[in-house]
Amino acid sequence: MVYGTSSARAEMSELRRLRTLLPPELQSWVTVEATTATNSSLITCEELGQDEVEIQIDLLKWEQFAKDQRNLLFWHQVARIQNDTIPRDGWEMAALAIGLGGAVGELWVQDGLLLMLALALCGVSGWRLYQRNNSQKSVDDLTAADQKAIALATRFGYTLPNAYKSLGSALKILIDQSPSRRNRKRYETRLQSLKDSAAEAKARSQSMRAEQRNRMPDMNYPS
Image (cartoon, rainbow, N blue to C red; front, side, top):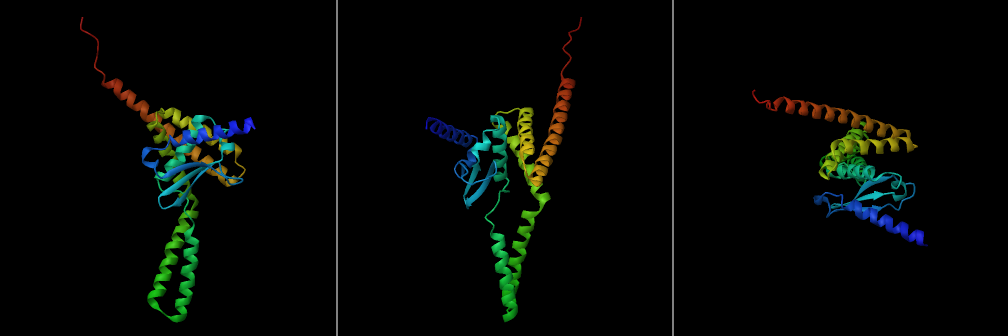
């Protein structure tokens, strides 16, 4: 009983800690909760309403990661919210069904205006479904969120190298633990993109330091 109480307190403490990592502009409408779903993802986010988003965490899996790794994985989800690339409520399938049904009905009654509206609804919902299921766009969204997570980490006091190392090491764990080949491939793509970005950042830093050294005045006094 004591162990259960202690574990619950630790989980609540971790959720409170993560809430402090939300940027101030998100704190009023983004919540952080433990997931209640079985066989859930490590961390995900879901739009609950027009002005409410919830970040859900499997705290049992979460314990396997170091604190810095958790922070970067958390900021990745925050970045997805900021980039407006979180999963929606799936209205597209319902809209597509309504549009197709309406189009068939209007063909029967031969109402041109309503037929055009039904076809437009089919077009919009079909395009949204294509975007959602486009694997390349999905990967691009994830890598963009990784870059913003790095920027958020520096905003909260991380050095750039430590931010890259923390997220990179977390992705390596996810690659090793993922039973899904598709998810594993996505993690590997994200990790490679992160390595490329880190190498570019390192090269820029070295170039800037070299320029600063070249601009330093000669401090040798004349004899």
